[in-house]
Length: 133
Ligand code: HEC
Image 1 (cartoon, rainbow, N blue to C red):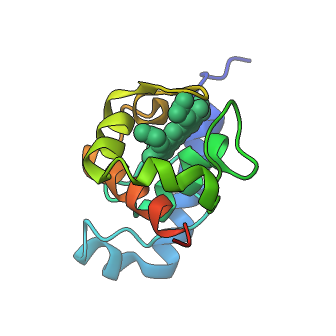
Image 2 (tube, protein in one colour; image 1 turned 30 degrees about the vertical axis):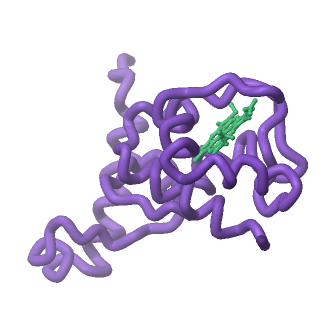
């Protein structure tokens, strides 16, 4: 008995395709580019994540309160106020290019180099919006 390595993955994909197909086949095909937005397909790298989605998938690993490795926690006014005072351009530069500051290391794009600059910028904006100023 020999099974190719990708057997169970491709079976998973076929089941997934089948379920999506049953639900929305003609519409989904017609509107290609508009994914049916399955919330749980964690592996899917859709091209246009919102800032909140990027945060929830990537940045949360370090920025979820109370913050890991010196990362300012989401919504922590004291941690964010002096950072925001640097200006958005500086914050965005630090996230896109990586930054070592007084509390730790912010890795370039949160180590998700596959994400676009635009998606990362939206995540920075999302995080800044969560701070009461
Ligand atoms: C591996 C942990 C880690 C991940 C993942 C991570 N960060 Fe950070 N981030 C940090 C740390 C640590 C700092 C604080 C660095 C310092 O000031 O010393 C930081 C700082 C920042 C700052 C403030 C920069 C400044 O100039 O003060 C922003 C904005 C930021 N992160 C956004 C993000 C975004 C957006 C993501 C997701 C795309 C993300 N981070 C993912 C660890 C992380």
